[in-house]
Image 1 (cartoon, rainbow over the protein chains, first blue to last red):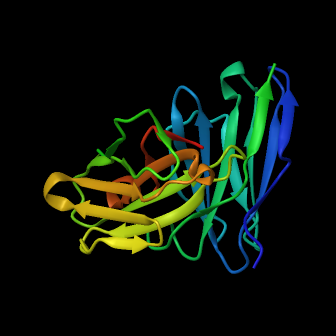
Image 2 (image 1 turned 60 degrees about the vertical axis):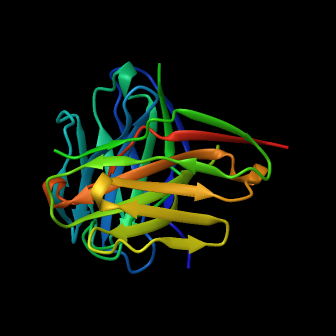
Length: 114
Length: 115
C-alpha cells in the first residue's frame, strides 16, 4: 500500500506570496492532519480534516487554512507568507479521526520563505 | 493542558551500546495515547509504537523496547545493541480528548550512533 504522499517536496517563496501544499493520504484513510515543524517551536499541530470537515484546529493565525476533498486528499494554504513560515510541513493520515487510530506521516514539504 | 518532555536533547553512543530515551508527560485526560516516532535525516516521521493509557504492558520489538509507567508518567524507549542506522531524531507524542486528539510532541532527542 502506498504511503502518504506530499507535493511539492521543496518550495521557495518570497514574503507576501501565498502557497498551496498538497497531501494524498494512504488509501482508505479518511482523516488528514497537518503539522508544522521548525527548529524553534518543534512540531506543532495545524489542523485536522475528516470527511471534508475541519474537525480540529491548532493555534495558528487565519493565514493558514486547509481543505479536504471527497477523495480525502487535502490541501493547506498559507497566504501572505512571512519569514517565520519557513518550515517543514508534515501531513499525516489515519483511518478514522486522529486519536482513535494511529497517524502515519508523509515525507513533508520544505518551505523556504525569502 | 498536555505536555511532553524529552529532557535529553542529544545522545551520542558507540555502536552496540544500549541507549534509553526518556519521555515524561502531563495530561488531565483519563484516557490518552502515547507514541514514539523516528525522524531520519530525510524528514519523514516513522511510526514506531502506540500505547493506550489503560495498557501498561511493556513491549519489545526486536532491539526496541518500551517501558510505560503511569505512576511516574513516563514512557521510555530503549534501543538494545544500537546500530548506525538508528541515528535519527526520536519524538515522543501524546494525544487525548483535551487536545481533540491532535498529537502533542516533545522536542525530540537526537541520537547519534557512531561505529
